[in-house]
Length: 287
Image (cartoon, rainbow, N blue to C red; front, side, top):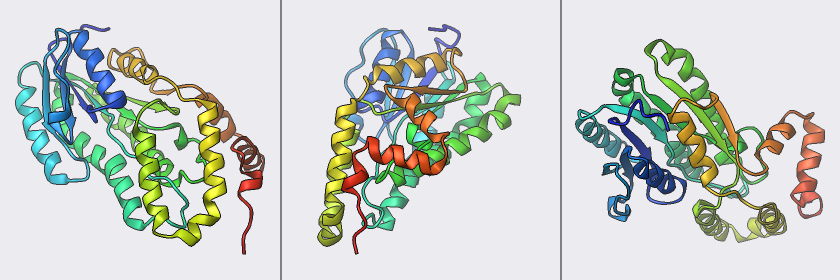
């Protein structure tokens, strides 16, 4: 790993579990200094390795916590500066568009788009000072939206568009920007999303019943396709921080297939997606 910013701090949002937790552990073991921004600081495990760990509360759905976190980050970063920001935190809202309440869509964008945007904007003065790096975590669904994943795909597509503008605007200040699009990963975020989806479906049992076969087919198809180890994303983030990454990186098992499918004619693409996900029979018109 590049040692240029060894004394600097790396801010990782969503470091409580999953990829964020694994990334923070790898950075600390490599001797890097990590600020773990999480909703519940008490859940962050003790530091391991020769790096220093600071934790702070951050809920991207609560603007007041963003402002407080930025003040705390600025104070911590006086010792070495803020060398990188990794916008890892996010949520998945999935399910039939017919049953997803508008407030859930707002929550999806608040946490996956507006929150990271607000945090990044506030930290730009610190990142300019160190000619640091911004790493945004997208999703492969930004290329191709599977059925029932409209909200998460829309939020990641929006983040991708904002990310496209960042390097053009920030290059004069020496700030590098990298967007990482992971495929499905072995983390708890999908189980959490499925639980929340079931809660929404329970509010509209008649409508939900019509989608049950398709949802079951989707879940089975994803289980068969397999998810990749979070280490794939961790490695991509480490490469980005050290300056060894392309501006946009697609990582994870099957992620490349999504990109290829997205380039096909729409009717052919949709037919292949329905077939691959087992939806040709499960998702039928109902009147």
